[in-house]
Image (cartoon, rainbow, N blue to C red; front, side, top):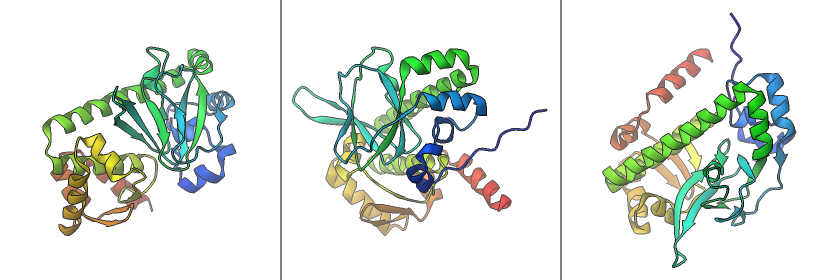
Length: 260
């Protein structure tokens, strides 16, 4: 019976200083692709220069040529109304793919802007498509990633449609916590690169409401806020309050503690 390959835990330091050793397997596709296949995949990746804060990776309407993997930093994707008003559609963290929604129409439906200095890997889609036909493992992982994107969108619709303002913010924070944890980072302490206004726009809340809720959560002992740094002091209560599922995180944390 073949031995399962151990998943590598990627730290932000590794991502920033060891780009030559970085591959899509380590950042975005942690399981299911053989080492030999990863070498072929890594060969088609173009590591772009870092985007300064506020610069666009692509704009709505741009021709679709590539998907992108965030190596360091973060991006927001947004739509623009006819009146010029922005609607934030998502935030993208290290290890996540951007641009998958452009495949269907061969053009980007949203714009992507750097929230901070951000490094990405560009994966030309034509090359990726050809390679995935040769590598069944890669094809399965791409489908898995796309499925998770659809699931996350569905969950966000539930949050916006059925939850109170307090539950929306709690669910948002737990969602970020889960995503950081999935990439090997801390699930209880992280920086919010997005503004309170962006968070409110994403959750359908006024800026004043978001600021008031952060203050309330801090006064209730659920979290500690120091400018953009967030520490979740009582993650379990936030999970219960938001209705988010945290069992997987708890199980993984316990497993990690036993192995140390």
